[in-house]
Image 1 (tube, rainbow over the protein chains, first blue to last red):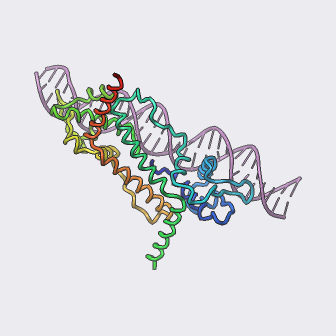
Image 2 (cartoon, helix red, strand yellow):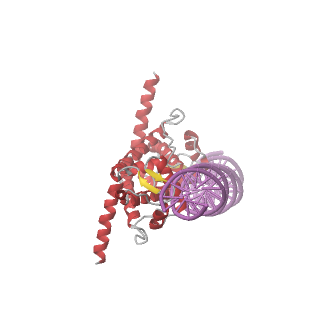
Image 3 (cartoon, protein in one colour):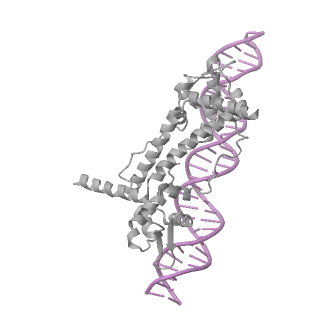
Length: 144
Length: 144
DNA sequence: ACAAACCCCACTGGAGAACCGGGGTATACT
DNA sequence: AGTATACCCCGGTTCTCCAGTGGGGTTTGT
């Protein structure tokens, strides 16, 4: 449950798409990459993964780009993570080969993961947008 | 906050030491490694780190070995982790170079870390020993 | 003296993360 | 029709970190 570049880039991109959501017109990789300082060829891969995961829709050809597949408040950070950190190997296998001790240790980490998931499931893209907006408001006030 | 081999091995070793704690005589790397199937030369490094972190004491020479530095209920899993995953780079630096968006994302992960730490701080070595014991009791009953 | 144990440091091999590049395909606009 | 735009797919490269290995030293009990 660490924050990789992958996940961060993807979230930043999705935030851009969230802001664009009401316009109903696609946003290009180039635009997003430029605005958030992300290597564009890499972002391309990530958006492709998000598309396969059903989080965004793509439109090919000229004037194409990406759109959010559903409303920003219906996509949680956990959705994003589990889409990217794919091919999850759920534990609970081969309990016989493990010692009792490592099983006990494993239980603790399962609890850790559960707690982490709670947090990640709680926040939606909309929440992040709101946070960002109120934060930039604050920055502006301090500037004055 | 992932469970690395490093952390798992260390915890297994500390569990062994916890069980030996009341005898007041040191336990050797060899013994621990054999019992928990850990490469002994690797475990050596880990125990050295734990010693520098003040979690175990060592006794050199023949009949030497390792002892827990304090009672098993006074060592939390978090103590172990923060000792091993050393040289932490605390964030909060260069907030000026980061965009507002990535700052917001960062906050979420700080919350995740905080929750994880709560869990890891809650369990002590004693707790794990107790869990292990009641688990082996259960296994025994199922066997019958 | 000698053997048992810890101590320290350096090295290697493999895996995964972060990118980069090339060539293909769909779409809009003229 | 032709061209430019932008996504699509797949493979390679570089770099870092984890897990594990090895060699040589020092302390201590018998």
